[in-house]
Image 1 (cartoon, rainbow, N blue to C red):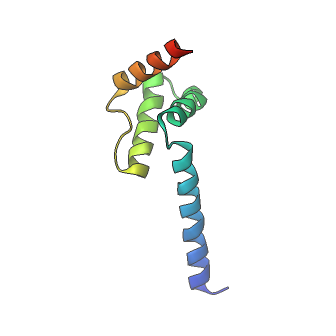
Image 2: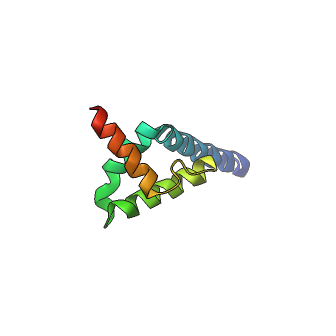
Length: 82
């Protein structure tokens, strides 16, 4: 394998991983579910939210929620519907 082929393979793997992560966060419901899967990795829920919202912004170019309060409102509406 040439150096160019190795480099292209590495770049393709990075893009595939990025696409997979984008699919995992592509909707508000998926974001919501991922948030709760990762809460135990952070001291507070706000820290978990901030980390995930920043990751979302890095992937999609904008934040899904403007702040933690707007996420809480979404969460409350979602739990009331159940």
